[in-house]
Amino acid sequence: MRTLLLYREDGPLARALGRSNPFAPSLLLVIAVLPLAVVIVLGERSDGAVAAVFAWFIALGGLSRGSDLESDRFRWTVPPLLRAGEYAAIIWLAPAAGLALLVVLAFHHYDLVYRLRYHPPAPPTLGGGWDTRLIAAWIMLVAGALPEGFYAGAGILGGLFVAECVASWLKFDEQTQGDAE
Image (cartoon, rainbow, N blue to C red; front, top):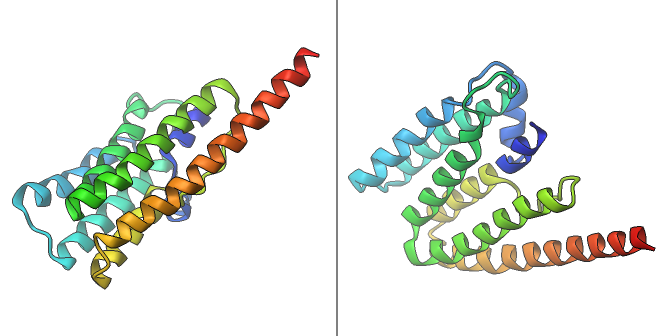
């Protein structure tokens, strides 16, 4: 169950919201993603609409962290729904620059899954979490810093994630060689 929490890659706001309501079901995320999907389909991209759907998604996504993972039958849906919401929001705001950022995030999430599979404990998350990245995206939108902000974010996060990945795998390699001796 702890692995599912790590796959969520929550930032500080989502973790705080999850602690505030330990009874929220994980299916709350389905309700969280719906308004985002609707505004994307309608083509509405005003600052207010983006703020509203991001706030809704972050609030319900964070609250869903408090779900009882032991008895929640739909707990497996949480990481994919968070990824779908985050990725869709990024592409919606700046398609070309968003793609650059998505490549970096996809690499990070792939690395997260395989590091947890082959050498737990949990890796550190230098990316701030999905909630922090969405808040940063909205701030960049309002400041008029898109698409440049996404390109810069992709470069910065890409460097951090690759360095984190390499350091982790080198440490794992040293540990396995030490165990073999």
